[in-house]
Length: 333
Image (cartoon, rainbow, N blue to C red; front, side):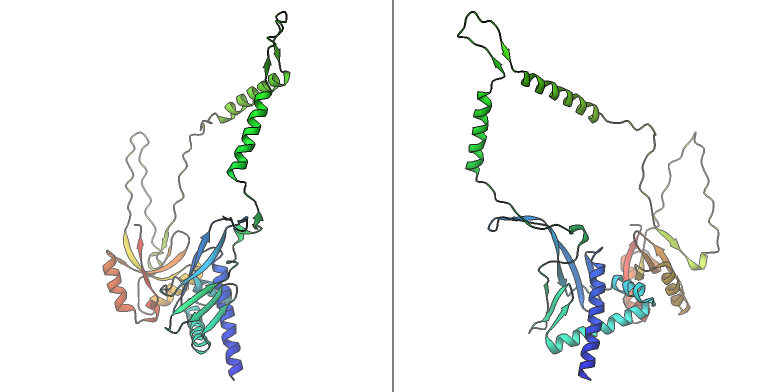
C-alpha cells in the first residue's frame, strides 16, 4: 500500500513539473497555487579569466514561496493537455500540491525533473536548488563555451609599435635628393590603386546611406486589441458610428472606460471561457463575461470605480468556489 502511494505521488509530481518546464519556455514566472512561484533569471555571457573560457548566456531558475496567488497559467495548461474544465484543473492541481507537501514532510526533499530539488528545512521553510545546467531555453541552443586566451597589454602595444614602424618604412612617394640631375618623383602604383578603390567604396557607401523617402504616405500605427464579449447583450446591435466630412475634421474623443474588475480565470481558450462564464451566471452571479485582452482571454466579474471597491467586493465572495482564486485587475488604465 505504501509503495502504491509513493508511485502515485511520483506520477503527480512528474506531471506537474513537466507542465512547469513547458510553461517556462515562453514565461519567466509560473506560480503553483499553494506551493510558490518558479521564476526564471537570465544570466548574460561572461568571460572566466581563471579558465580562459567564454561562457554562453543561459537561464537559471529560482523559487519564491511567497508567490501563491493563482495566475491561471498552470491551470490553463492542465485544461489544454487533458481536455478538462477549469474547476477540475484547479482541483487536480490542489491534489498534486498536497502530495508534494506530504513528500516534503516525510522525506524532507523532492526532485522536480529538469528543474531542481525542493527541500524542507528544520525551520519548515522551503529551499530550492536549481540545476547547474540551467533550464530549457530554445534561444540558447548550440551556444557552447570556447577557449580564448587574452593577450597582455604590453604584448598588444609591442605589436602596434612594430606595425607602425613597418608602415613608416614603406613610403608611398619617394624623392631621391642625392642625385641632383634626377628630377623624377617615384609614386607607388599600389598606393594609387588603393586610393582609387577607397574612393569608389566611399562613393558607394554615401549613396547607400542616403535616406529613402516614404512616398506612400502611409502612417504605421500599432494594432489595438481588447474585445469584450457580454453574453447578456450579445443580441443587441452596436450603433453605427457617424463619419464626419473630410473638409472639417473633428478631433476624435477616446473613451477609456476605465474601471476595475475581478478576474476569475485567465489564459484559457474562448470556448472554455464561455462555458465557465455560463456556469457562474447560472450559479446566481450575473455579470460574468469574457474579456479578450492583450495576449490572453479572461473571465471577468463586476465593474468597480476604484480598486478599494473591487477588493472590498472580492473579500465578501472569497468563500465561494468561483472566487476562491480570483484577483483584481485594472482595465483601460
